[in-house]
Image (spheres, rainbow, N blue to C red):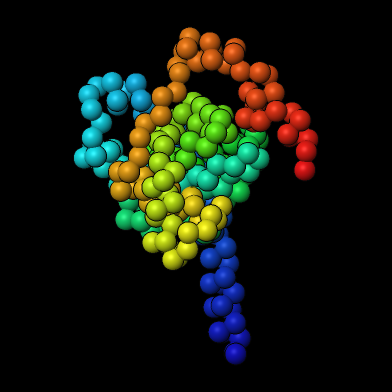
Length: 221
């Protein structure tokens, strides 16, 4: 390689590095804008205005939405994200703990994905597994992210479509859940608001409020 070619290559690499720095700055700016404009739609808003039928559910999932599927666990959750065409926008599953710190990391992850893919709103789909989904659902709704539920039976029946296997997979299930949401196969959970939320929180033992499981379980391996 001659000196002229080497110089051109160095210039190209330098230019690329500058573009990457600028793109990160742009992503941060987009994240801030998206975070300010996020609006969580709830059961009160949709279900009480009339019957929320299949066509309404399909219309609710708009092109500007990032669709996130979440597999709920007692200690660890997994999420994956797709668009309205079913194309996966995440590189595999994102793992986070069932805690306030974990929820914050999940929120940051979905916001960055939304910014990269020009999405303005976010919807999170999950299976209502025990009581473990309460904390993350309340957290996401309070941060402007809509939360919907899918039927566990529908998830089970959809497993074979993905990879011809009925076996449970924490990293596979989130994508199945996201696709069910995309196709309008979901319901809006009832989450207490205002004074009713305060009344419910006062009836939940303190150890459950932060992470959804007792302190004894948190300390166990």
